[in-house]
Length: 480
Image 1 (tube, rainbow, N blue to C red):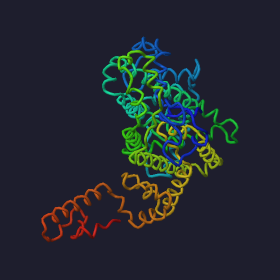
Image 2 (cartoon, helix red, strand yellow):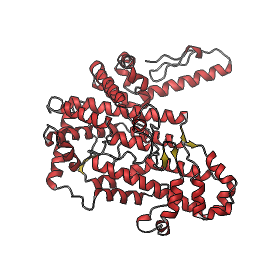
Image 3 (cartoon, rainbow, N blue to C red):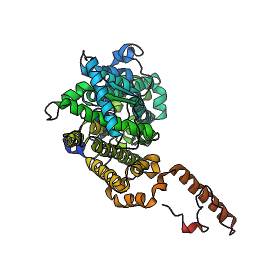
Image 4 (spheres, one colour):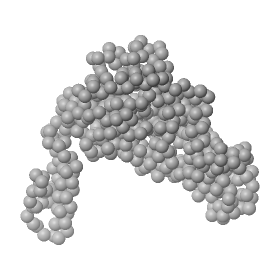
């Protein structure tokens, strides 16, 4: 697929784009960059003169829906244009085959996880259906980043210049929405041709409880593979419904994933010294002339600055995606491994597809500057498998009861300690983790209050079967 779906950079060498060891990796989350240096608003200045007709038609036709930071009408139409004029609907026979594959996969998964079936609906989507049904989630993912970028660079103009520009600034906001919508549309059009299921990129993009497969893409994916297409359909259905079990029965998971993207967006900062230098000696009245405004914007490029908070958000997102994918690999492998002879080969094909730039890799590389490293996926799968073998299904799935119980990036690198903590905690460690955390916090608050009085008092009585913290706060609290 295209390297530049919703990315910041349209330049740089291939090596830079392929790196996954640092945030950004040569990508630029909005495709407005003129090169490896990063964000280049000159693209918007050029659009002021070259797309005047689109601006004059704002509010009607293709240019509608431009009130937000991303023009989603433009995104949707451009995405559909890439699919061609005709997208064949899914036949009733194909839809029935998809439903049968999902039903069979659900039966097999019952023995591989303690989570019950999560999908209430199984559907066969066309590429157009995928665009339509996933756009609300893309809007949540893209709006925070687009809003932060567009608001930040317009705010970078000196106050006098902004006042003199007047309506021109509103026009720039609309052009920004068109630019972002165009980039998103290109990305969605490419993704719609390639995604195999509703959760192919690791996120629950579709409606809650809906398991979706894309038969046309699955047929193209099956070409050249040794396994029958019917077996590939069941394997992919198993992955889709396994994702649905996790997302439906771990209610905080969706918010954690999308929240990590939003946290990244809120931390975006830029260096506008080049813009300020260009505008310092310019007559502000000249800003009413689009050609003059283009001249200012073309003076330099503005690279987003990575903050420690952004790095933490990206690390959380990468780790959480790896944990989800690793869990699905282990569960699906246990469910279908002995029933589908080619399951192992299919799993390896999907791993290579992601590692060489499949939809998941490219989407996150272009959206938030994150490449989901295959190494993390393998390590996450290894951790879940060892936890299954040593602690059992219930303890493994119980780790998803609360985000604080999940392994972190360090645990993926050295899983032995985490596995030992789960086994050593016994079955009761996961019976009611929320109550356990609440009791610990209450005990710590009570102990802190005593310390503030400067008096030594008897330890508090037991509550709910949990002991409060030690009398001396410096001793810390024991944890399972």
